[in-house]
Length: 225
Image 1: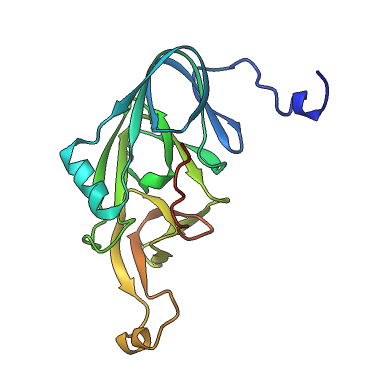
Image 2 (image 1 turned 90 degrees about the horizontal axis):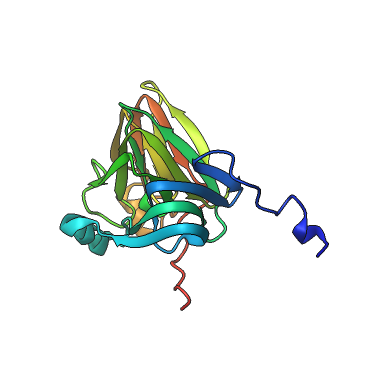
């Protein structure tokens, strides 16, 4: 067979290293030797001796997911082989979490991660339970975390002298050392008159980085069966 489809641009090459690597802009390859974790339904191909098992979030995690529509539905991937992961052709990125780090990320942006990482589902401080998207996954430990994002994310530095305000539907995550609270940018009277559509943002203060995607949340697409 000939043609651009079969060129080196698209052809999968032998793995050069174990673990997680970016296969292309919208796909992550993971060479599994033991166990790793991934979003349920994100595996698009695999080879070798791998087993996939649904991983529960516990009673608390399931409750938060039911309240907010968010959460982190996971599967464990075990054995020896290779697997490729993707989510609706979104762009893929890898974050290295080191001991002492704490990285908070919206569950919808998590694609896969090393089993050496620990995570918990947490309420955004200062936000209570006032709407979807305010429960996030907090990762600690040592390992790689694969993320997806619609478009190319913005990474904004936050300093003690200059807090950053982010639309709650556009935030991807942030690093340790940042305090969060809700900020209302419109008066009550303006909101009654229709407002600007940007009434409440998440304010991040301290020293670190916040990651923002270049679009707000899109309506959930029903899965095809």
